[in-house]
Amino acid sequence: MEEGTVFERESIADKVGRYIFLLLIVLIVAGGFFTWARISTGSHNALQEARGVRAAMKLVSIEYYGGNGSIYDRNAYDGMAKGAADMIRAMSYSDGEIELKAWDEDNNVPIAFTYRKDSYVIEFRAVGDMADPDDVWDVYYAFHLMKYTTEHGPE
Image 1: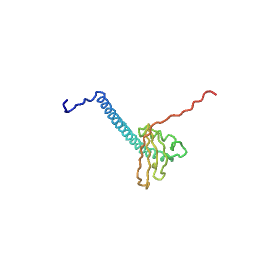
Image 2: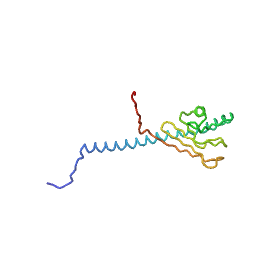
Image 3: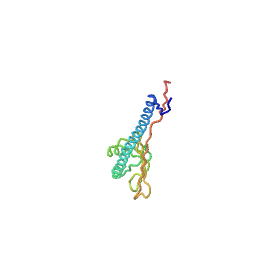
Image 4: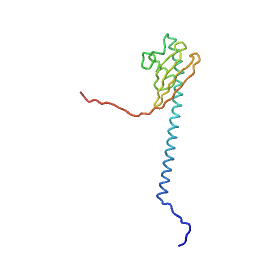
């Protein structure tokens, strides 16, 4: 027998396995990018709505101030006087949940509030001197992990 170069053929199963592995890697990377892009776009939209809510809060507070009242009601579940949240939603064209946490009575501006829309939570805080505060906006994305309910039968 002669010595020489020996060529080995790659089996079709090895080729198919390699292509399937490569396809899975591409799908995982593309899926991760798509998910990141969707969350990022949604967070920017929710932040814009929250900024609109803040501007509407200032305008609605002027209306309440003209009626010798305040938009802030610390005893209410959402921290606002009756009807204020509806006026703010209508004025800002937003449909999320608004919770006013702190209000500056002297300057008639919000110090802190939370805006929730879908899976996004935006928290606003004014820090520093209230005459010229620095605005801090925190945007969170939350997803539903579990729903626990207790069903009771007729007693």
